[in-house]
Length: 119
Image (cartoon, rainbow, N blue to C red; front, top):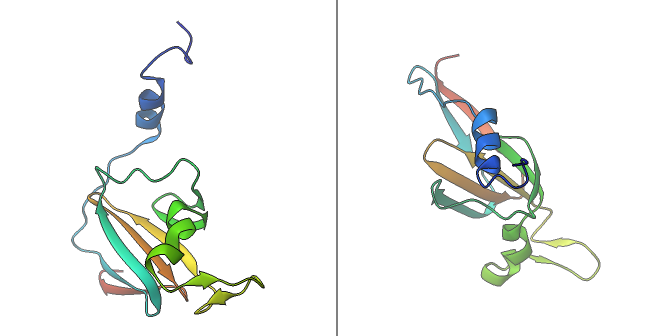
């Protein structure tokens, strides 16, 4: 049976590329989005994302395109105007993948990362 015929090939590939997330309570970080349009937290067990999402990064992501960005104007006042400009300003979709949560933020600026404990 070839890999394309193997029903668990995708799962096997995912597991081969995975590594455990280890808790380190000696290091605590705070990530602050001062000017966000939307911020949402989902349970990682139920948030697989769209196969059409395009992003860079693995656990900290910056999205080039996403289902969230495609629908942003449906549930916020944020809009891409006819001339290509953005209201209320140019935004970026950031994603943070944690052990238990998927965090999405569409923000008008880069996040600030503060080290609360550890180095």
